[in-house]
Length: 88
Ligand SMILES: [Zn+2]
Figure 1 (cartoon, protein in one colour):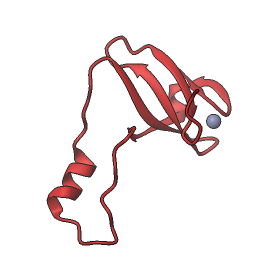
Figure 2 (tube, helix red, strand yellow):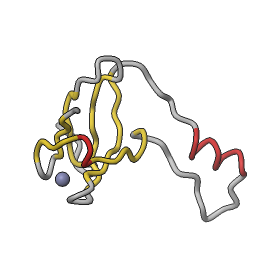
Figure 3 (cartoon, helix red, strand yellow):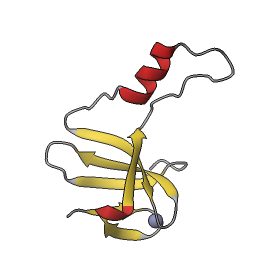
Figure 4 (tube, helix red, strand yellow):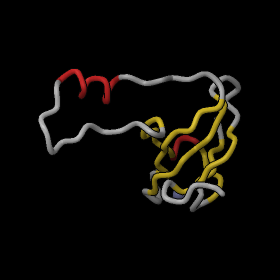
């Protein structure tokens, strides 16, 4: 079991969280035709970087999205902040 810090509720059990994607992944523009390859890349391709990663997670009880920074090798949690307010 891991403890994740929700920036709105504080530290909680990892079972309360849902992974929402890698930070910076851009959804294809749906106002234009989107090729199947572009959708497939968006939906199924991950950078899956080793080391310090920044990801978007949702805390299910408060339904807020936020950025979780962690080390993908050691699984250490390095911090979190609201999605709309990056740290200074
Ligand atoms: Zn929360």
